[in-house]
Length: 338
Image 1 (cartoon, rainbow, N blue to C red):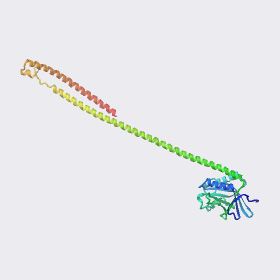
Image 2: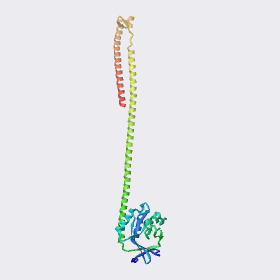
Image 3: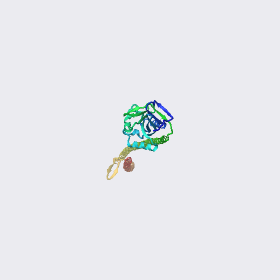
């Protein structure tokens, strides 16, 4: 293959040996950008370019790279058919006449096991011919190329970064940037939606608690009011019953006293003679004037007796009417209390 070394290069490390590695600047920039954008995430990529011998030296010319989608979500060390389909689709759509010459790896959480832990991945996916492994960590702990030889990795002393127009890699980087920004925006939207959903749920729960509190307070207030009303009614009924009982007792005592007084006032000492009523004075021979006065007194007594009888009847009617009225009042009050 006719090939001449790039004119604009920058040497990294010790490049002595029979293997020369040249990596275009956009490839290095893309690899390091992936690491910065996806911290604490296992990252994988496929290195593209050419591999050949020149002046008895093995030369790797790396001018492209595609990321391995969902590399950190793989189920085994062997890339799935979907992963390889995505890799070859990106290669076909973005690059021309480039071959797979190796792969890229970065994982902040597995520094101590790199690259030994990657041997199985390399054997299952990149063991055909001599393939490279480039490991880079942003903190500087790893920035090395390894060559797979004799079923193991051989660390290379150094490499070259070269600079030239690389339109295909630049365009791919721009597309990946837009895709990554879109993914980030979608993720941000999802996070925002989740946050809004949590806020809305909390607000709904708060409203439910407030409604329950108001209902509980309302029921408690209603129970309190009902208790006060029932207590007042019971107290009023008790007082009413007591007053009514006292009034009835007083009325009965008054009636008994009146009836007793009427009977005592009506007592008259008389004797019957020949169907007439005469006083004791007449029988004993009192004078005619005295008899006349006594007759007048007798007439007055008769009127008093008639008056007493009328009073007794009236009191008895009042007693019966009062008791009946009180009975009705008690009965009505009981109904009211219910």
